[in-house]
Length: 131
Ligand SMILES: [Zn+2]
Image (cartoon, rainbow, N blue to C red; front, side, top):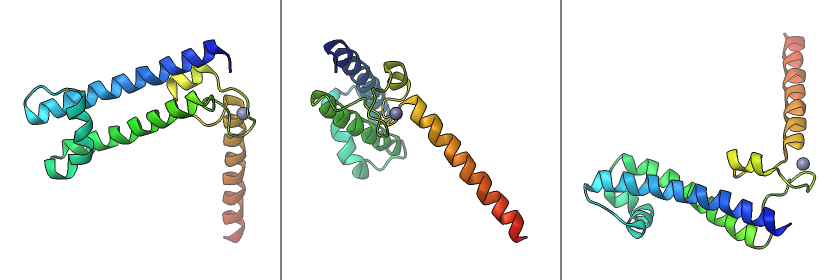
């Protein structure tokens, strides 16, 4: 992985992380009706059950995404992030920007969709034959 790509991917992940943290901080401060800092927002993930507020389901969901981003950042540090699960090729930065957790490159994803579509159709035909 080139240093340039490494820096770009890091930027993509950190930007996403920032967005989520901002959203969570906003939500937590709305619920608590007070300003919160990043640590307050992060602790809300583990205290969601005591907060007893429906809004915190959303916070928890964001927490899950944030966890994935942190994992991706760790993988990136090992230069293991951004490669296709199927062919091992680099997943384009454009793709990762819209889908940070994409595990396949576009070509492999498309091939997979075609394959799945074929299987679906084959199953359908099977059902019709049974009738
Ligand atoms: Zn691939």
